[in-house]
Image 1 (cartoon, helix red, strand yellow):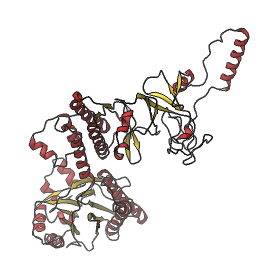
Image 2 (tube, helix red, strand yellow; image 1 turned 90 degrees about the vertical axis):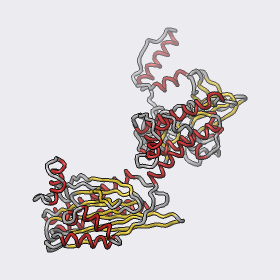
Image 3 (cartoon, helix red, strand yellow; image 1 turned 60 degrees about the vertical axis):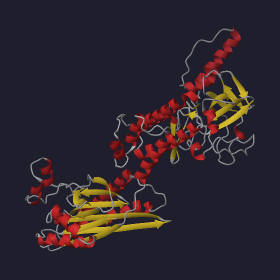
Image 4 (cartoon, one colour; image 1 turned 180 degrees about the horizontal axis):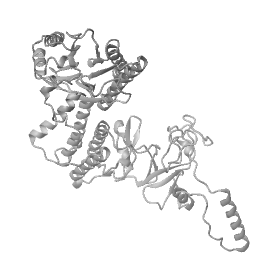
Length: 578
């Protein structure tokens, strides 16, 4: 790919101007030695009328340059555009008067002797375009784009200029210089592309047009979106082929999205019950829609666009559930000081009748003894909270911020790693073995992402039952996984407090992340091992169900843990959703 000597940006192989700064891109030229050889042979030809001997140029000449050297037959269209014929369709077109309309910004105020655009500074040198020459009533190709008037759909289509000369129309496709989109794309990007293309198909079908097959190479990146680089198969439909062409367009869209996401093709006809379940569960996503297109359950572009839009809204627009929070921490019966720390942060925003809700909840169990464990847990909580508030929550409250689960998981992981860095640094400064377990929950509306290291736990309480979200990084949990220990034996095993992963243990740390969809009536429970070891899950379920509110439940849980022996510090955070 040619690299611009001015701004350093890489451009497409065939580009003649830098897409970023419009500087002409230098092509490889023959060397001085080649010129001397040509002069010597041409002089000898003039004297002896003999042909020069064959010689291979020492420089590398690109295939594009060789084509320009051949100088195929050409003519001017509308007194301005040179058409390079004999090269097939589309034609190569040269604008011999580029000053009339700037290729970069569209300005039409430049003068014939201007070398650069007065508005944007782009070089006004002759430019090559791909062009299609058709009759005025064209039935195929990019010339049909002028039938579309919707601005949103036009922004998805190739940028073009149309010039008429006599009964013919020359359609010039503008080259942005941008490359094809990087593959594979994530689900959110694919849903956005699919929704926009399905809307385009619905509009085209209403005009009696078909888009035809596309490949990923026909899509290019654009600021905040994508657009079509070419529409080689756009055509007008005969009445007899209308239904068939619509189905073929939808099949082509499904195939394109499979290629964009590297989704394996599966075709399975769903029963009415399965179809209803697919549209209401979290598994209702892009693969489900592609299957429905292939089996004919979705046979209209407008319906496909609505399905994509509904899934996209479900993925990116969390419902604003109300959060009722309780929290409590206690030294316990046996220990002489409390090494646990917790944090609760709630954010609510109501703007123009639209509500949004966020929550940040952390429980950390410090290790290392007096002046070490409580320092470690406090450092960890503060470090993670500072990062999340600075790098996520302050941005999340901005208007029209879409929820992006992969991004939220990544920021939660970074927050836990930042907490680990803080504990590792302080441990080295003090020369001790301080550490901490760590459980964090970041709530965005009806979504929660949990990050976990160690054996502090996160539970989801639903329908009066607790389900553990996190997984303990402990010796006893490893023995359970290996089948050498039953889940009930975890509570009495002599090594039940041995953790295999914790903050402060090492600079490189693996962080588990989990995501859940929350429902009204659910509760989120975070607690240290001093809580769940003393009060097993059935007891905690009963106490939560009996409590009048979240704070009352937390006090009841801590009291029950102390009554059961209080062998460790006890910390619990309970968030109820409505």
